[in-house]
Structure formats: C-alpha cells, structure tokens
Amino acid sequence: MAQTHVLLYGATGRMGRAIRASLHEFSDVTLRACVAPAPDVDPCPPGCVWMTPEEMFRGSGLPSDLVVIDVSVAAGTASLLDRLGRSPYALVSATTGLTDADEARVKALGSRVPVLRARNLSPGNSLACAMLRSLPRSATEMFDLDLIEHHHAGKRDAPSGTALAWASILAPGTTPRAGAGPGEPRGKGEIRVH
Image 1 (tube, rainbow, N blue to C red):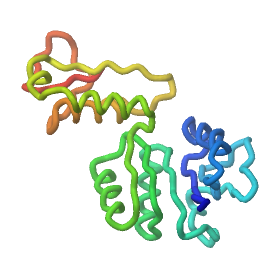
Image 2: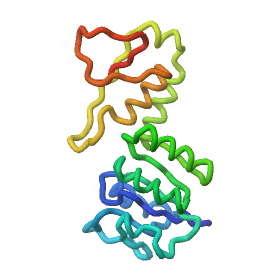
Image 3: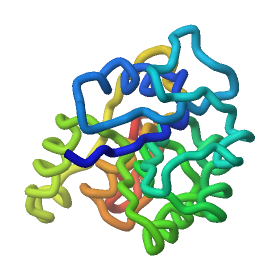
Image 4: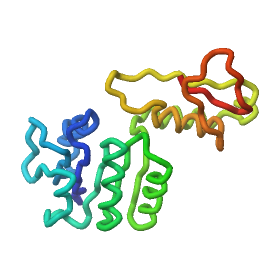
C-alpha cells in the first residue's frame, strides 16, 4: 500500500489536534511534519518533526509527494500560499475567512498541483450542500432566506465559511449580509446570516 506523506499546517489548533489524534486510524498515512508557531505539549509520532512556519520547506528533507493539510487561520494560509507558490505541494485547504485574493491564489495553485478546497470537512456539511443544491431555484426565490449559525466560543470568523458556502448555493452571485436587524429593508435575493 502506497503511503501518503502529510505536513499538518496549523497542528496546534482545534482541527490540527483532532487530525493528529485520528491519524493512527489510517495505516497508509504518515505524518511527517507538524507546523505551528510553537510545538504542542503532545509529541509528534516517530518520523515526524515540529517546525515553525518560517522553517517549513527549508532543508527539511520532506518528500516531493508530500500533501499539505492546512487547518490554520486565514493569515497563516496567506503565508502558506506564499511558500507554496515557490515550492508547490498538493494541498488540502480547510481554512475559512480567506480573502478573495487568497481564494484566487488557492485556485491558481490548483492548476499546478492537486488541491482540495473545502471550508468545512464535515460529512454532514457535504450532505447539507447536496440537499441545498437539490432545491428548485423557484423555491429559493419565493421566500426571504436567513441562515442562523451557532458556534463554539473560540470561533474566529463570522459569518463562517460554511454559512458563506450555503448562501452561495442558495443565491448564487449575491453577497450575504451579516447582522441585519428586523425591519431593515431586504435587497432582492439577499440572504441574511445571523
């Protein structure tokens, strides 16, 4: 069985810790590097090294078929994209809150190496997106649409990437409006995110 070599960027965050905790379930995946501003208290598995974002790719001896999994924050992704522009590796990009310019950089990287861009890696989100896509356009145009989201206290971006993705499915080409109050005029096709 071929091994997939992984560099985990954002290894000390909530998702980074969850990924590290689950990798033992996949015998064909080898965690080669954990990248974060400072190492976590949990050690890397054998064969894996901790490195800072500045140390990444510098004489690291990482394999050329490495897959970078990015679960950092938007500013971290911007920095990672600078490095991947010079040293392209396959990328799983799961960070939310990226600027339009950084989304375009992720897309451009995809013309050079394999890229999976997902704002939400949950299987439930995939199911919800499929259900929203199945709605007839006439149904979404008949009603005023609002998305209500609730997150853990550490959530850094609002509206979330998931809410933005759902809004783009329900009303393509429109920009969702965050925090609109009751009674405020609603633009044609406007989706509000609360």
